Amino acid sequence: MRIGEVSLNTNNVVALANFYKQLLRIDNDSSDEIHQTLICEETQFTIYNDGSHKNNNNQNIILAFTVEDIETEYQKLLEMGVEIIEKPVQRPWGATNMSFYDLDRNIIYFRSFSV
Image (cartoon, rainbow, N blue to C red; front, side):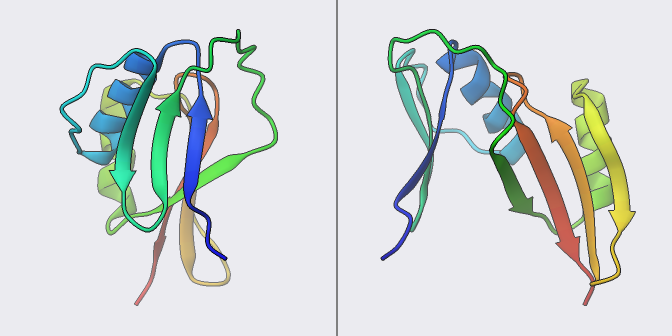
């Protein structure tokens, strides 16, 4: 069994999808207001509005992305005006992690690993 899709439900698909397009340096050539697929690999990453109102009190899920250069990504987030939760920190197990909020206040981690 594999995870087939991770989807973020949102009140504003276009704004949240545009945030992730800029964050992940991707473009899906879509401006759909209901559903956008951003990554279509083994596990899809989608932004979706199911018609219900979201309260944006997201406390039970964290998305983590592995990046090549966390310092470069950190500077990009600062330029985007993203609210940083924790600046890049070297962990004892060799990873460097940082965390921040997306537009809907989902917690996002960027991590890189020392070689």
